[in-house]
Amino acid sequence: MSSRRDLERVGLALFFLLAVVPVGASLVYAAFYAFGLTGLLAHGFTLSHARAAFLTSSEVSASLLLSVYVAAAVVVLTAGVALPLSLVLRRRLEGRLLSAVLSLPLALPGLVAASLVWHLLGGAGPVSRVAFRLGLIRGIGDFPSPVQDAWGAGIILTHSALAIPFFVLLFTEIDRAEKLPALLELAAALGASPRQAATRIRLPLLLKKAFPTLALLFVVVLGSYEVPLVLGRAYPQMVSLLVLRRYAMFDITLKPEAFILALGYAALVLVILKIAFRRKGLRNEP
Amino acid sequence: MSPRAAARLEAVVACGAALASIFPFAYLLFLSVAAPAVYPALFPESLRFDRWRAVLGAGELLPSLAVSFMVSTAVAFLATSAGYLSGRAVAREQHPSRLLLLAYLPYALSPVILGACLLFFFIRLGLVGTVPGVVLAHTIPAFGFSVVFWVPFWNEEKRSMEELVQTLGGTRRQALGRVLLPLSREPLVLCFFQTFLVSWFQYGLTVLVGGGKVQTLPVRIYDYLGEADMGYAAVASLLLVVPPLVLLGVNRRIARWFL
Image (cartoon, rainbow over all chains, first blue to last red; front, side, top):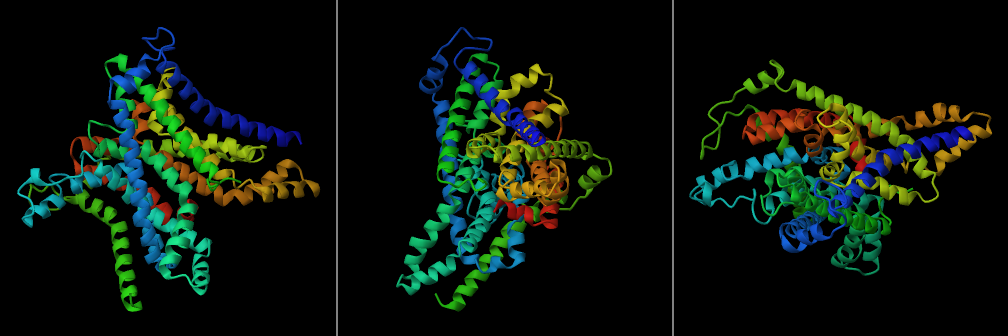
């Protein structure tokens, strides 16, 4: 009995040491710094940094808005493309070859994917050259490159391209696990049209089951660093980039704002995870 | 749509999806041997293999490859072994979902933001710019992943097995060594590879904690991009994607685990 408890104690101690302590220490330190309780310029509790971050400067709000917009766009685009693809490819994905090929992009890190998009779709990239040869543009300057554009198109495109194959496989797996074809046959037998069966049974079920994973995709994109580093603009920057820039800036008066932003971001992630948990779905729950 | 047209559409979409999945790797291979081409030329004037010779012969990227491999192996070992025990402890708690939410945090939070908030402690501990510092920093998100991986493994079935061994006169150590560890062999391998990849792909956290002194492969890729040297960036990228590709090829379960 005691060795069992010892093993569990060791497990819990490791859990606190490697999960609770780092996250707790980082958030407490960020809060202390953000509210003037520690750091080189600390003069006691103050909300002035928070006011400066959100009211005086527009960069922090713009960064949060951009990050939420990019993450939402990636989730919508990924689900919007992966769902119909999974429906069309359902039968073919029962074979091993196509599912093996579609899982290849899982091996592609964000930095590599971003560098490819930067090269392919940059002003002097191959797509621009083809457009020039076809007479669609008159030079590099005419090419509407999604690299470092105002709408974060390159970032959205890269994250979506990385996520779509995974979600095609996920939706297909859910389709199979939930025995949706049998359910749809039943719906048809009861008089539902193919359109009704798709929009009222298949899509809601697939989206409901995939919701936690889509929520995690939102969280991952929200805090992504490498892809916006390569493909994003200098203003506004996504959250991770702005936190790091403010943190490492020569002007140390801006450092507390980095922690304000980090706290805002952490709160948002926590809320999203809570929602994903409440919907019963972080699938690894015992 | 007629069945024939539907089948044709299915075939076209399948081919398109397969080509799109293979394209990044094929294009990286092409870039790694392509000489620069002046705008608006579509193709390089020649193919050059000196980059590969520099990497494989002169060992241009081999130190970074070795550092990446060393860091990721250490992270995978730490995260998998600690996560194995922690997952078991969390699963046996009265309210595992609360602890599981905590386990998701280090994994879900941006490693760079978490790293920026923890950098003060790393500086105080003298870990900045060192390999152990980078290993510890990578272990935090990898451990979160590992716990999330192991909690469902330690289900009621495993608890019953442990109890059965004890009922039959076995000790706790025998239950672990002769029943649970053999049962865990496959998930242990999967978790090891997954946590290896969590570390293998890290860039931001490595730069932050490594302070430019710990040069892993992703750091070198970004350096090459900064120099607009897409050829060497492609070579380094191919080296970076080889281990995950091999893992996918050897064991498709790794992909299935995600699903």
